[in-house]
Length: 57
Image 1: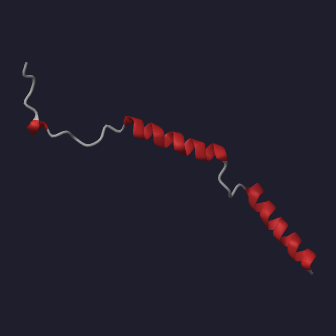
Image 2: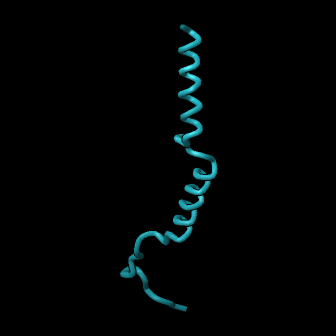
Image 3: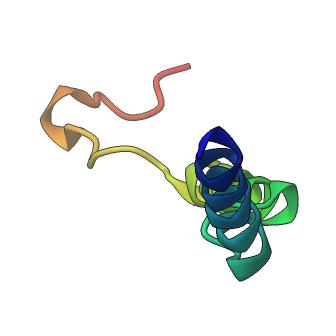
């Protein structure tokens, strides 16, 4: 009886791993790289030009 339960658990775990329900390292790395590229081009909010006095030598 215990062997049947152990076999069922092993079968479920192996089926879960083989089906790809767990996220792979390449997918995690791709998401991190995509977020880094979005952050690289983010210039922030608009600037307040009313405080700018212009160029004064």
